[in-house]
Length: 107
Image (tube, rainbow, N blue to C red; front, side, top):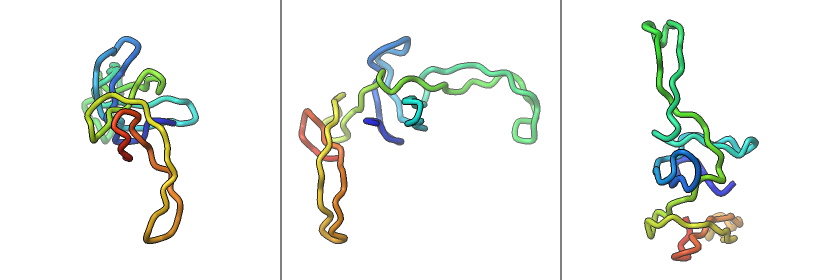
């Protein structure tokens, strides 16, 4: 999946076109993710110890990962991502890093 937790993303399709937010949770098996303050829905909850009042709670619902694009932390542009294999100098292990297609920086 091209999106990871804590990425900043921009919505490029659907009802929330143009909104930006931080990825809170990723569901790779369903190809969906939850973004902060995007796709807010209202849910009726009964009283519990965590929420003794109960009532209507507003929370984020998931959207499809194909409707978002990652914003590069280096160039602050919405970009597609590629991958590059890098060898770690300390542990001598190969790692797969994401690469911005615009500025060619790894993140």
